[in-house]
Amino acid sequence: MKPSIPKGTRDFSPLEMSRRNYIFDTIRSVFGLFGYRQIETPSMENLSTLMGKYGEEGDKLLFKIQNSGDYMSGLTDEELLSRNSLKLASKFCEKGLRYDLTVPFARFVVMHREELQFPFKRFQIQPVWRADRPQKGRYREFYQCDADVVGSDSLLYEIELIQMIDMVFSKFGVRVAIKLNNRKILAGIAEAIGQADKMVDITVAIDKLDKIGLDGVNAELAEKGLPQEAIDKLQPIIKLEGSNAQKLDVIAGVLEGSETGLKGVGECRFILDGAEKLGLKNELELDLTLARGLNYYTGAIFEVKALDVEIGSISGGGRYDNLTGIFGMPGVSGVGISFGADRIYDVLNQLDLYPKETAGGVKVLFLNLGQEESAFSMKLVTGLRRAGIAAELYPDEAKMKKQMSYANAGNVPYVAIVGSDELAQEKVTLKNMESGNQELIDAVNLKDYIK
Image (cartoon, rainbow, N blue to C red; front, top):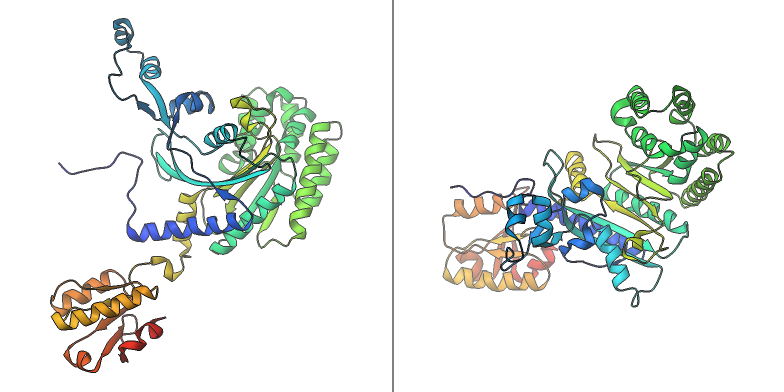
């Protein structure tokens, strides 16, 4: 029987891993520049920590871990025969794999609050698991790269996060549009059209504008019970164009009677002015149709779209007011962003933006041409490694063709040849595998030449 891996999971080859590490290292370096510090939380959490935090749908997508030992002992025959899988799972599963990094972070803040200095800036780059139906671009195991700051209401952090997004994608060489909106503006719009109680329905529909177009959005709004008059009032807001300042002026007029809405306009104005004064490389755009799964954001919301590749959002986030309230520590405001590593990987692949050195691997392969020659080569390999240059000696005196094809398969840039002539002169013939040129070099100068 051929071995296989669970659906929705992946193996990563050395080349894929070097590319993934390039993504993680780039993001990690930017997080560090802004004073965010890394934490890690366990792969599994108590189910009591996870259940009920992601809605009913999320509860179904949690991977639950069966208790070890005799997990059946506490069950009655009646419970076993009921075949109620959800109820049974709650009896013999006390732990589950984490579904995201946000809830574990909230748990971390509450558990360690005495040791933490607020505002507390953390980042986390770890895998998460979801028992979702695997499909293109959606996996059951994937990485999240999150940065959050908790314990401050300051909008300077929103500006800082926009700068971080801008810097990360500039380093990758990917042109993006950073879209900004505010939950309070969306609440104000629902209020202004007399449909405050339909706010979630309105935002969920508007959020699909890119996918289903304006007619589709309007049809969905009608389906959700919005009167035609309210839908008509929404049209100019959905179609709003112009500069960020012009959009804000128009929306401020529409939201004249809504205190919440005007507060959102003021917050957006502050963030946009502040970020634009700092000189961003990518465009920052106020997008009043941006909604993001709104149950937990309370202020600014962000989303990042790649401009040169057709793909969903590659980063997003926002301000939330009560992250730790779910664990009995209310009133801790925070704001954060998450980078979609898997989607960024696809974008960099499509645009071929990986630096050459990302491939990693050995820089010099020494051919094995005999016992004395390989002993001399081994000394040179050791010297190169000590100088920080990845080097390798082929293990056997195999045919030259076989050794060279090993170098080609590993994309090794240089092959070093030490035969009897080179050994007698203490020199090395160095072949550049890209150009095909060969040079005879003094062994002592080898590391300087390669560097």
